[in-house]
Image 1 (cartoon, helix red, strand yellow):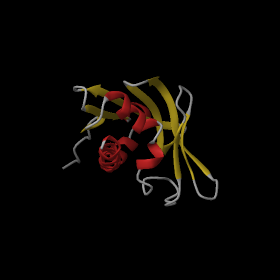
Image 2: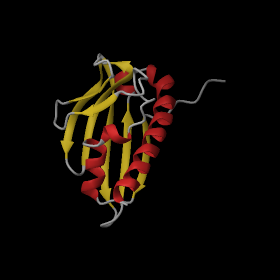
Image 3: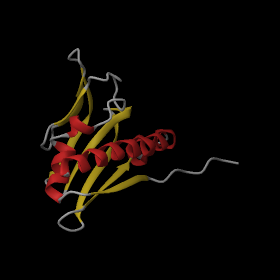
Image 4: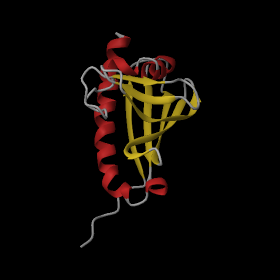
Length: 154
């Protein structure tokens, strides 16, 4: 019996109690405040997570020793509604997967944040082994983001 084929897109979502513009700002400008430090290439608990807020900008970490590890590149930037980036973690810059993060105002108080991580068309057979790790990782990341967003709103 063969293993089931994973879905072509890993989709995760969270609803946070903060307005649309704040939800976007927390994800982007404040990413170092909430991103789980264990979800990095270095594993350095003092690593800084940075996202350059423009198309072509880097998504990367900088360790306490100043070593930078590039995670991807911003491919779309539409504040406060969406951003997209290539994702090298689990693959390489030569064979990245793609991530879109969309922000939808439910009302003036709540925002839904939805992640769509795509890959089989870019990373081929690697997707079957990487997508479960991506799904688990985004669950942890969204939990951290949601917890921080609630603190910011309070």
